[in-house]
Length: 314
Length: 284
Image (cartoon, rainbow over all chains, first blue to last red; front, side):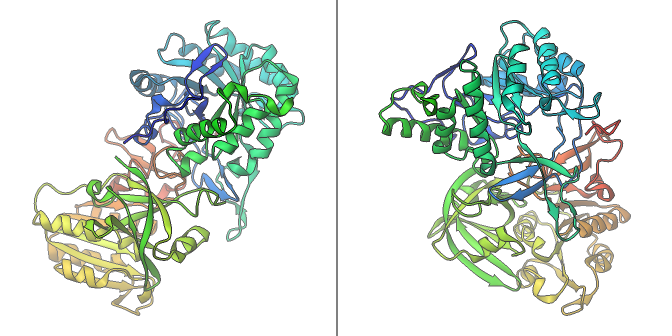
C-alpha cells in the first residue's frame, strides 16, 4: 500500500507564490529523481510538490564514482548533475508526472546564463509544472567556474534571463547557497531580478579524505554536504532571509528528518519545506513528515500550518 | 513492489568471517526473485548514520513462525556493517525491499556455472534452486582469499552437480583464483551461462572467461549505494545498451545483475569518453 497523509483537522494547505498546494512538504531536488521511484512507496500526488532533479539543456553523464561519502549525520555528494537533458526529461519524466496528476516544480541548471534561459524556455506550456526552481549553485563556465549563487550580479543575471524566458505567471524560486558571507544580499538581488520565492538552502561545499589513499574520497574532490548535520545552518539562513524580506515565499530545506525539524523551519520563516537526504533513509519520509507536522500543530492547538510560520520572529 | 518494513531480528549467527542475519520481512518473500536485495537502516531514527546498506537476499521464508523472513550475509568492515553484525535476536531492524532487478533465467534447461566470491555467493543459492527447478544443471565455484571467508560450501555441494573451491592462500580447495578453474568447469559441464557475484575484479575476470568460451555471463555488481531505490545516483557504472551506447546506469535499479559483456569493467569508476552525455570540456 502506498502511503498517503492521514486525515487531519489541521489545515495543511499552503499558498506559495500563487501556487495552491495541499501539503507544505515537498521532495528536494536531487533526492527524488523525477518522482517515479518514490511513487512505489508513497502516492506522489499526495505530497505538496515533487521538486525534480536539476535538468540541463543536454544529456549529462555526471561525474565518475566515488560520488558519495557518508559523514556524521549527513553525506557528501558529487553527482555532477547526471541527467537526460531537457527534451528527454519533458518527454519521459514530466509526461509521467503530469499523467499521474503530480504537482511538479522543475529544478533547472546551466553552465552559463544563456543555457538557463534555453532550458526555461522549453518549459513553457508543459502541463503539471507549477513552478521552476533555479539551481544557481553551479559553476559558471564562462567566469572561471565561479558559482552563480555566490555573486549577487551573476545570480541576478540568471534569474533575470529565466524570467524573460517563461510566462509572467510562472512562479520562479531561486535556490540559494549558504556558502556566502551574507545570504540576504544574494536573496535581495534575485528577488529584484524577478524571483517569486526562494529555496533555502542548497548543500554546503565540503571534502572528505580517504585515510587509506590519503586522497579526497570523491572523484570530484569536493562535494555538497547535506543531511541533519547542516540543519542549524539552514535554519539560520531562513531566519536571516525572513527578517530581511518579510513577504518573500520561502521553501526551507536542509537536514529535515522529522516533523519537529520541519516545524523549526516554519517558525524561522519558511512557508513550505523540502525533504532531501532523509528520503534515502526513509522512502516514505515526505508523507511521514507531513503527518508528524500535523500532529505537532494539533498538540499546540493550532488549526493551520500558516499559524506557525514566522513565529520565531515575534 | 518494494516495501519499508520495521521488523525484528530473528537470528544473527556467526558463520566463518560473516554473520547470517534473519529478519522478519512481512510480504517481501512473496515478491522476491533471486538476485534481489534489501537496504538496511543503521540504527534508529536518531542514528547519525543515515545511509542504508545494501545486502543481497540469501534466503527467504514466506511461512515461518515469524511470518515472512529474509536472510542476509554481513561482512563487518565499517561502522554500518559492524552495527548490523552486533544485532541480537528481537532487536529492531528496518528493511526496504525487495529491490533491484533479479537475475535473468535461461528459457531452456541449459547447464549453468555459478561463481561466488566470498560472501558475494549469498544470492546464488536461491538462484541455483530456481535453475534446478527449470531443469538446468548447476555447477558451483566458490572462491575467497582464505578458508574462513568462503561462504556456503555445504549448501553449494548439496544443490550442484560439482563444486570447485579456490582460495588465494590454499587453505581450502585449489590455491588460486576462481578463474583458474572456471574454463575447465565450463568445458566439462558444457555450460551456456555463467552467473557471478563477488568483487568487481572477479566479475571482470569471469566475464572475460565467459566471452572467450562464447557463452553468456550475468554478473551481480557491488557498488556503494546511498538509497538502493534509484534516487541518489551514486551507484552508477558504465554499461553498453542494446543500442550500442554507453550510459552511466544505476546498479540498484538497472542492476545489480548486468550482462558481463555489457559492463565496461576497465572503466568502472570513470566516465568513458563516448558515454552518453560525457563532459566535452571538463565542465562536470
